[in-house]
Image (cartoon, rainbow, N blue to C red):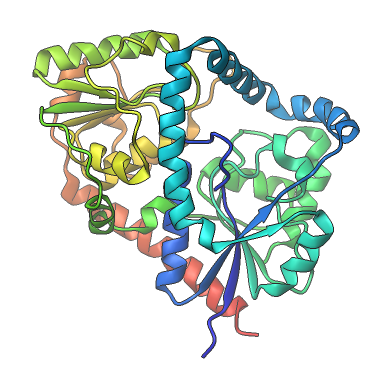
Length: 394
């Protein structure tokens, strides 16, 4: 029997985008579909926008929350120009991550060079699916790609663990958001806030499911990491900070001093952070997603302000502490996805409070946590596979 062909819209672009969580959730999505006898194709859109069209798009991009991302890109451009060490090390990481993507994603990619070709191409798939990550961010709304608006009306469309990445949608996008949500045959989101957005702006319903990385078991991720050659001979604390807070780095150093562990630090992942130049005992850059999982798995402790750093700490049953990426008192800050994740598995005690050593060494009842993780995984996977089976029948 011929396999059903799933056209997936995933965050697998290159362009110096080397966030590990992004690659790992795409890998998990593909593996789950392939393991269940679906042919997976990754839909890639090579959008060519004229200079005039780009100029007209800038105001809406900034209005939709693109200012912070623009600043990150300018920050990288500045440091690539003036900081030779950063440029060299960033290139090493980019190469490692892109080699991983070339191996696991590139053979599956179907490229379309125009929106018309994209629309015609959608008819080649038995079902189109948009994956996780913050693909429904308001700043990407204008592309009409990640919301599957290009997909033919007769092709089933679903979203698995979609994320808006914000707590509210700009009012000028309400009508368009409602339109694309109500075209989908099934919607699932990875955050409670996302479910609230879907159901408040449209007549659609949304299921709350686990992040794609949680669809794979601990043993599957351990097997995945076994091919990595990365090894640290010392006892160490794995530090994965994406934000800039200097005080949490001080806490990491304090824990290292009190435990006698070294600090293995992932520096400058999302952007250049000057205070990280001299932070940590080891700062490897030649780290692909497989190496990332292995380094985390073999750590004595994990310290992170990352959503996926927290997820992998839980799945790999590590002693970990999660910090908020920005100070909790910062006006307009939101940490709902971290709060929801820790609350879901009864791990709110792992959110940093005031005594780093006491919190870090405290035991975690992973027997109980494992039951909750397995239950959430099975619920989410059964929903996904159930809808795929129903919608791919014809």
